[in-house]
Amino acid sequence: MAGYEWERTESGNPRVARYSKLPPAHYRFQVTACNEDGVWNEAGSALALMVQPPFWRTWWFLAGTAVGFLGTIIGLVHYFSTQKLQRQLENLRQREAIERERARIARDIHDQLGASLTQVSMLGELVESDKSFPVEVEAHARQICQTARETTRALDEIVWTVNPSNDTLDGLITYVCKNAQDYLAMAGLRYRLDVPAQLPDAPISPEARHNLFLASKEAITNVVRHAQASSVWIRLRLEPPTFSLEIEDNGRGVAGRDEKTAQWRNGLRNMRKRMEDIGGSFFIGPAPGGGTLVRLSAPFGRR
Image (tube, rainbow, N blue to C red; front, side, top):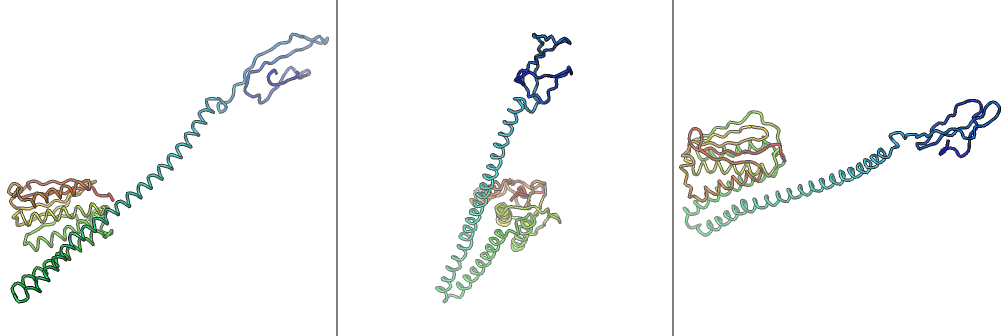
């Protein structure tokens, strides 16, 4: 077998040549024989052969395997590198969120508590300077009490905002309704709360909870100060993946409000900005039965 053997092989009487496990290649099988008188056929005969390799030893299979193996290595390296970068990015986002929350808390303490305490200090000095005038002292004392109550309420709001146990839809709606009840009752307005008995256990980020509360508080304040209403209806509508908090009054409506009042315009602009910052929406328009309807919509289930 040329290409496999270097010397001729004597097969004897059997007219069969067996070759096992020939490597894939081209061969030339050559054979000579003699007759019964011992005369040899010197020319002999030849047969060309080609042994095909199995598919796993073909060039295209080996090349594909090498490319696949190399692609797998590159894919694994890319996957683990991407996962590491994503973890680092998530850590950066968490640190950034913490820094924003700390800055917001510091700002709230400075703006709300700092201003109130400064006012109390100034009123105390006025009491000292006007102690010879009982009427003035009494007026200053009432203002000190009012400022102290507002300071307590502001501190309660700050503590509620930073408490992580309140990062739920139920915690938000409960506090919003409580704040609205206290404020509307103090203003002498009738109110009605329309909230589902069972709220979904949906998480809400501290930023979204803070902005939603302040927007709803601004809407309630506008009703008391500008609407000239006698009753307020607060509704919660669940429309997964969003929810909507509606504040409706029976006052003079949007058209009857003084659009030249800077405080009114700033309040609307602030509410819209707060809702946009958390991926929500803000709507204000005429209520179906007259008055004004404010709708604060936001997605839930996000942290």
